[in-house]
Image 1 (tube, one colour):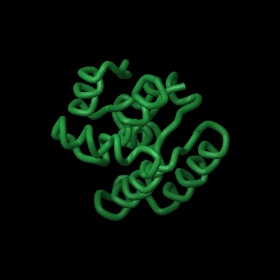
Image 2 (tube, one colour; image 1 turned 45 degrees about the vertical axis):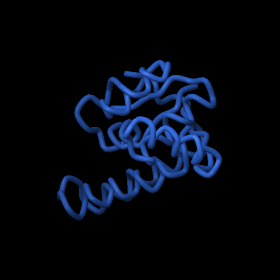
Image 3 (spheres, rainbow, N blue to C red; image 1 turned 30 degrees about the horizontal axis):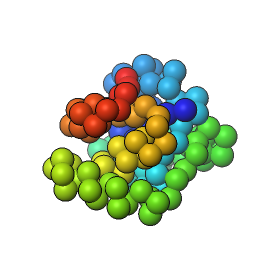
Image 4 (cartoon, rainbow, N blue to C red; image 1 turned 90 degrees about the horizontal axis):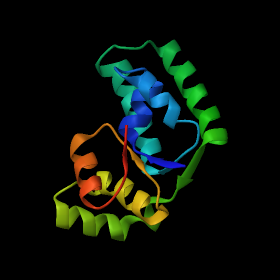
Length: 132
């Protein structure tokens, strides 16, 4: 089990550069419910702002993501982790959003999967195993 942040989840489903290297970690992940909002926003942006995917591809990606959520993802309420995340954010200068994933990994004692270098660096500083 690992804690996956939105950067990793989005990269995997939108097949961004390096997405295949994430597949070995994506079999079963946990994340905070905020990641779902970030995922949908990234899909919207890829379609409407960047024109990287078509509306038909959006439907396919969303359907695949919804199936994945039911079978391969444990979603934790962000409210269960917000106080610890806020402390990390204040202490380390990281956003509360990014700190939620670090707090989840710390609390659940699992590695953190992220493509965000600052988040990865702070996670390591706080004793987490970070992936990839």
